[in-house]
Figure 1 (cartoon, rainbow, N blue to C red):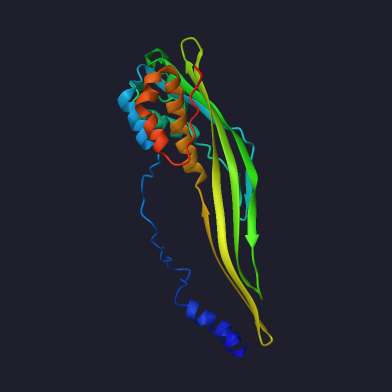
Figure 2 (cartoon, rainbow, N blue to C red; figure 1 turned 45 degrees about the horizontal axis):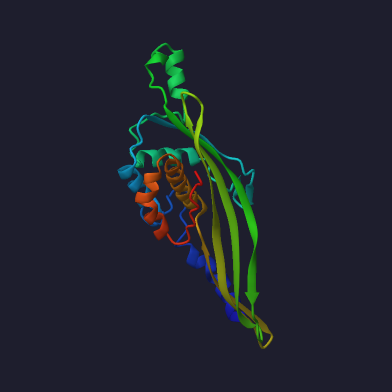
Length: 262
């Protein structure tokens, strides 16, 4: 115990070499590189671009977070689900090589120029099709856990899941007719495994815990769902697309595709 106390007393001495003064910049650590994350459905979107010509003028409206779920953490309060699903879908349309895409995500710059008399509203291209929807399901499923301890030593395992669901609608802008509608859901998986040791060595209790966690990224999974949802809507309108691209869906592990009765 005396050795531990001495180490704690010497700790500030060692930290002085790592802490900058008020007139110095702290050295910033370098992390992993910036990258463009790919999903298992990027190949599916590429197949859509090749096999289905998205003719006309396309746009994306609101794809809202309608779950109403918030997360209260030590760093503040925020939403579980990203508020940028519409932007993800707009990028997906670009990847699918729609014939013409107009940006209706933020009309404020356009409206400002019209109000200032700098631009005529009649110059803008009219939409032929637009996509809207909502993320309306976020249910946390009670997980399972197991732990075995013998003489204060033993492993443990814990598993948790959540269900995320969304609805997407493809609408004819000229008539407001809903051309296709899909419901997509996915289970998000997380687990934790660990090993603990708690023993007395004389009068001293030594408690050691080692654990590792895996959690599927929610927002990246949502991008996958939007990509898959675009494919499903277009397949309702073009059955040949399913014949040409369904093998990609089948090759993605864990995917269950239920073809439309139509």
